[in-house]
Image (cartoon, rainbow, N blue to C red):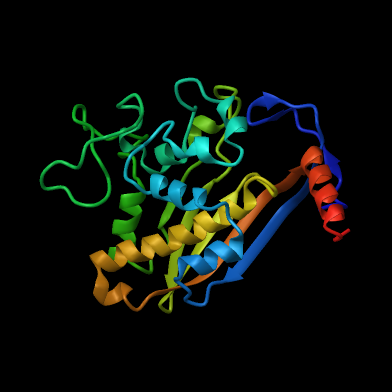
Length: 266
């Protein structure tokens, strides 16, 4: 990364910037998981921000399209994120993972499911009609779990986070960096594929890796509850990540190199 050519984009997170980034393009990472399901191992292996990463993960999978939620303010760069928020952000991961009833309440908090419904998805007290796409109702993370539990060898277990409304200038604001997540099972081994259009090596990479691995472990757990006969024999096996742009801001690189020099590593 230190030898990467400097790149200056017009905007970052929808805001004009006047600083260079060092950028690597078309970066692939593939890590064997070898059936490891212990969270503490992956916390240490990824060196994620703790306890924030775990708390935010639970917020993501809680069944509600929260916006803004609470954990954004506890993120190590929460003050940086605050400038993109008015009453709420223009998107959150919770809205994208649970979009059926997004924006039905001011903050995305929803009651429990109505009688007869199951799963993690929560429903609004009024207007419980799911959002509709071009031809079908929206899907969400619960739908992905239901599909995988029923058809573990499917190639369709993908949940998108980058939506058509993000294409082009749209509202001129932030765009979600994660394109989506895909989970696939072969020979009783589960893998997760995680494509991103953009990833900041200093501020996001470690947490992104941990949150994706934990998502795979969590989905396996949910599928075991629905179809234990099949899923009790399935183990986590591979984490694969593709970043169109992996980058570091020059000021962050300067700070990192100064710290490394102080520690005697440069």
